[in-house]
Amino acid sequence: MGEKRARAAIRATILAVDDEPRVLELVVEMLSSLGPFRVLQARTAPEAFEVLSSEQIDILLSDLFLGSYSGLDILHEAKAANPDIVIIFMTAQPSVEGAVAVLKEGAYDYLVKPFRRDDLKAAVERGMEKQKLQRENIHLKEQLALYQISEAMVGSVRVDDVLGLILDFVLKEFKADTASILLLDPATRELKLTQFRGKTRDIQGSYFVLGNDPACRSVVESAKPKVVNKSSPLVDGSPRPRIRSMVSYPLLAKGQVIGVLNVVRTETVNYFSQGELFSLGIVASKAATAIDSARLYEELESAYFDTINVLANSIEARDRYTRRHTDRVRYLTEMLAVQLGFSGEKLKEVRMGGILHDVGKISVPDHVLNKPGPLTKEEFAIMKKHPETGKKMLEGIEFLKPALPYVLYHHEQYDGSGYPYGLKGEEIPFEGRLLAVADTFDAIISDRPYRKGVPFEKALDELVKFSGRQFDPSVVNAFVSVWENHVLDLEFLATGKYLDLPVEAASSRK
Image 1 (cartoon, rainbow, N blue to C red):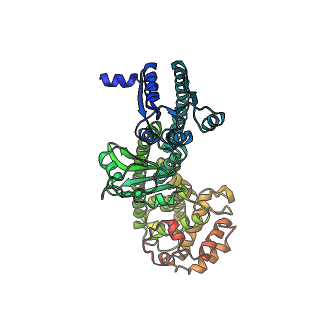
Image 2 (image 1 turned 120 degrees about the vertical axis):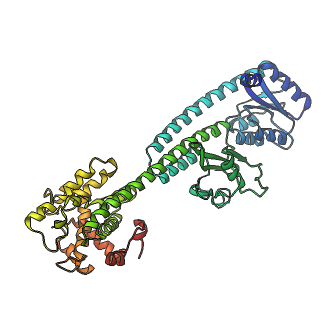
Image 3 (image 1 turned 180 degrees about the vertical axis):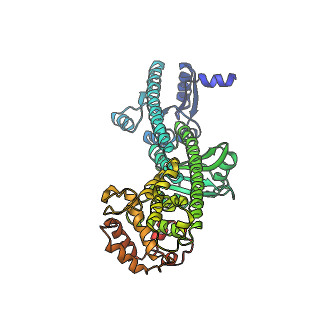
């Protein structure tokens, strides 16, 4: 307890460096008499560099020339170790050129030997005040940035999106060259590179970033961060890729390690400061929570999709004439959507709409649904209610609301002759116009008890023939493009074999 109080009372850690033993002794005595400072000392530049790399130094008080090392050499190494360090040089040979050179590069002040205790005290006090203001400013900026990234992560429900946000933020805010996230496979306990950002290809290819370095494993096993600087050896003594400074943080969610965040600076950049390491720890903590939440969302979404597939299949099980119709319409609608530039969440909404478009048929009696011939006027009136029935079934479920336009409007026709509302042209939501083309194409190519399905080319001709009347011309044009580019899986459409390719992959098949 007393040791903690003593540490808390220390105002700053000062490193004094001079190659003249008597001068160094006097400087250390003066500094020790100024107040509760922790004073360290070094007699050579290499000794000083060792202290700078292993200690958090607030103020460096150094001779301007140390053997073959100039003031600029000392300054650059000190700034690399701690960007907000206050550097005060001492010299017995003052020159305007030398003073200007080091001040321009970031030194705070310089003292001409011999100097008085009061001169030293004034320089140290001014330097500490400047450092305090700098750190407060940096802290405010970091807090604002952390708030912004937290808000962005909260608004993201996809794991890939969350990972991208984290890595882009880390590269920008922490001036890193490379950043990667490795997620832990729950089954194999292996770390797998999930996303990477950076411009340094040799770092990307290194086994450290790919998770095979024992240091990465130690982060997982200990659940504690690991900092690697230029002089740090690998755990197994192997040569290290070109790294100036690197930190690996465990991603902890609900007390369990789910991955590792690696942030790397190369040879030309500073070490991570204690303040930056603290902020990176906050980022890692928030990132782990966001990743865990996004994973949960995706698991729930997958369960929802399984549920709606069961619902759609239960309807098809009652309709023996339209087996696999839902799969084919979903597939065709997705392919059209890709052609029209849909991606990401919008494409998932297309899939949901394609699966659920006929969900309202659950209310259609079997004798109407399975009638082996054309429907009577009364029977068709019953069938025409299924879009509105489907809407009523789904509208109370928030997750399924994006499917509503597909369900409600896919029987509307471009000339206003469709149902349930007789909407015309662009009065029909685009989702309905999109699915109408896919739905009609599948109806034309499918067998019915009272007619055989027509060949694909003939069905395409029918779409073109009724473009601008029954169908939106832009959607028909997209269908023609998909057809001419040979990206449709004709075997699937012909045989009804199960297809569950990612639609982007399917659309790239020639």
